[in-house]
Length: 137
Image (cartoon, rainbow, N blue to C red; front, side):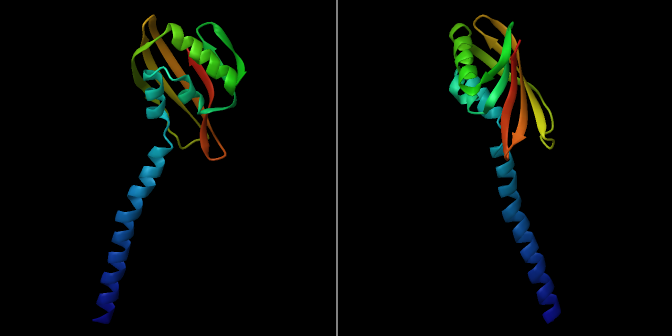
């Protein structure tokens, strides 16, 4: 009888841990997923919200202007883009698996002056996902 009680207790403990811990792990996973926050930042023409994900330097290409810029310079260039391209709609087209050291997200942006393809390359640096490349084509 005591043996059966220990078995039930152990099964209860394992079940409880699975129910309690798994949602926390999945919550932590989605907290680190920048795709929804980036969509919100683009919807609101918020260059500062996007630049929060930039590393110290970023490869930035907006239309035909491209180069490697500091985080601050890239934010200024995005602000300039938003002045003449107010977002009307944005949708995620593709996202690669985040299990690697880098991953990609592609959006389609409809603005007041045209439709653009947004390409983001992220690298995991010091436990955070940072944008290392952004192309607006």
